[in-house]
Image (cartoon, rainbow, N blue to C red):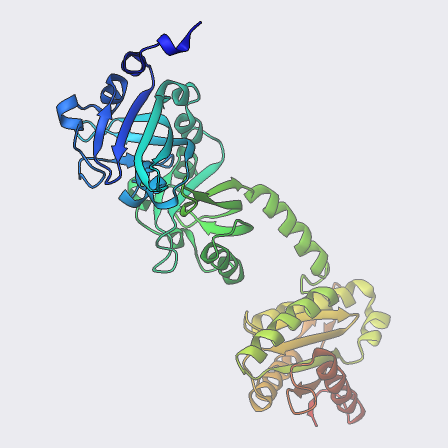
Length: 426
């Protein structure tokens, strides 16, 4: 076959590939019939048209409008390098319909190696892109999918631009209620600030991030998510969106939290056990230190508890411990850490409380216990008292749990040695 006998002009006119030739100022000097068809232009409309014409509208694979500087012809002029296999959507201004093309472009140079012309070719791939209906797959997926803008990450937060059906079913919000809002709409009083800070930091650095987070539905119900957030880049390598794929793990977290609760609770009194107390107390001390809040630690012992067991039996001893724990729970705030360390030994870490205020509170509690009467199965009346040792965050034991426990224990010993039924402060 003699290729020299082929007519190049006729070949271009009959190609099923669109071909457009721009001169160096981006004006179109040639467009074959397939190019005119894909661009929805007549020959007279196309010739002389440049890249700055406002009627040109192209989108990337995320349906984001492409800036003029990023048009294929302008990228070739800027880099003097060819472009291969770039997916671009040609947006029809009249119908907003998108025709997807696979685009290639390369520069033609003159003898001085200056760009003389730019040749752009493109093939219609709209049918191929529709073979797999990704939008339907995402919309009907079991996992929650949320897409936010990347541009607003450092302002009020990333604004939601898409949620799927699973999101509306889980949260109770309609799409219209959340579009344009930030994910903060889903957060509540027990959402971890540490987790949201971790997510915010990763997104500000345009990095992927995984996290488990507690969110709230429109009706206020709590639910847990296992979240995987990834940055979505355009063909031009800039991050334009963040996509979060989220799985509802509420049942799993409920089971885990119940197991954890069992592991840190004393089965008899339902107070924190030694392990649970130490974990919670350490967390409160760390918080108090960061915020320069006073804390006071109390060590408490039920006086002559062994005699109660010996005289009335262990079942009555257990009853005493339960009633004591109930009174203790009712007497102190939710912010205070209350625990049974073992036997008849208890401890309280009083949040935001100096030694003076703590002593007054423990004196009041001691008096309540002293006045309490327990009736046994045999109608015997039992009164019991407690001894208390206190320690605060004075110099040398500042926010150190072990040191404070030892100091409070020494004060507890002094309370017992000096007659019991008292609160002792050194």
